[in-house]
Amino acid sequence: MPRLLLVEDNSSSAAALAALLRREGFDVSTCTTAADALREFDRRGADMILLDQTLPDMTGLDLCLTLRARSDAGILIIGAGNDREDAAVAALDRGADDYLAKPYGLRELVARIRALLRRCAATARRHPAVIAAGPIALDPAAHTATLTGRPLDLPLKEFQLLETFVRNPGRTLARDQLLGAVWDSVDDDSNTLNVHVKRLRAKIEPDPAAPRHLVTVRGIGYKYLP
Image 1 (cartoon, rainbow, N blue to C red):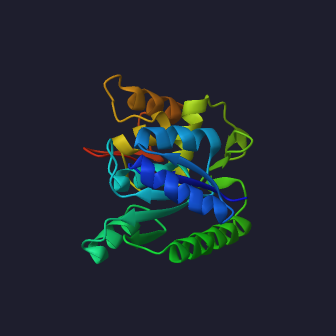
Image 2 (cartoon, rainbow, N blue to C red):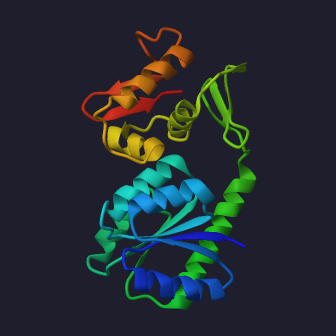
């Protein structure tokens, strides 16, 4: 049974839609905030995420960006209906797979969900479980990592951070995006991200003092160059 994560700030609307989707054969979990959605996704995962564009603690677009940095799950953003073209472009630019404006019909929503699940399943069949970019290969299910075939000893957060980079080779990832993806937070007062990047560089760079794989993008964040 496909697992859906429904993120909708209106609890009544979320409950009603979840009930309808369950009757269509889906296993549905609901959350009303971005923080709850991230915790639920880490706990149970999801084959697909239905994400309302308006949330109380984070915009739906920012949550989409955070989820995309940590997962290849299908993401469908549901918007308010105004400026549909601009809203759809913004959603797709943030990593969503599809966009649907309110009001919408249940049949169309279910059809889009099933179509997206088929595409995600086809993509999963084409790609192996191991994620590789440049000298680094990761197996998230087995929690193993190698550098040019040599095993890397990575604690959980270092592994998750490296996985986020390897899933997005060549892409600049903002500090708050990385913090949200790995620590479910955008508070960097403790300098946590800097410390973990330094530790990763010590393990993957030929010269950690002059990194060529895990590079700093000043004023924004970091990027991984295979």
